[in-house]
Length: 316
Image (cartoon, rainbow, N blue to C red):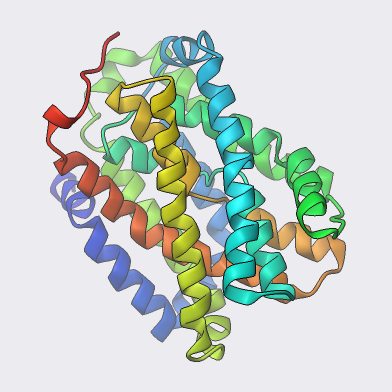
């Protein structure tokens, strides 16, 4: 079993493309998994949180400039880039509004897994994820209104409960266990990324399957929507390099790269449904979900292969 786990991590890029194709061609498999997205995400957060302890979290919190910069990058430049790519690719209308909404979303909960795979600061990525997610019910509607003039109704109770169950409770539990049983859990450090990769593939299938008809239904125009998603995703990596303004530590820069480039797509559908807006506004987020889940493993692999001489050594 250990060999399978390690193999999945090593081949994640190819497996992601295969699973994405499977979800498009045989969506029933993904539809069956769709009700389990929440539990799968929570389990992913728990597994990744087993890789760092409370002391590492404290080290991140003792440097508030790090989380503050992440918050500014996620909700500042990325929101503007969402609006800009929406106007560039779609002009006006529901898809343009949806692309803008996409830019205002918080960091995707799977970002710490990719940071782990890229040998980055996972504790830092988890803290960034928690902070940007916690503030999303307040910031997303404000930014979307400022950029589009459209008001969003916030299903506050549903979102808070979802965030608690998917992000905060699994993370706190994992960190607590790692802190209490550090020696024991450290013996499995070479397997957590592989276990997370398996969950990542299941989540991808659960995302693609239910959206397969919508994606394919756009025909050739789906390529335009995918291009807009890819453009915003790649721009996120560029925005993440702004972290070099305050740090040259490789592990920290990696945390910023995935924090800024990944977006929590599921929140978009919740806001759109609660607001009674056109379902088409949520379409860019669905496309982005697939795009980011394909590009992220590639980015992680490239970052690992990047010569260490190009980075400033980490110092603790």
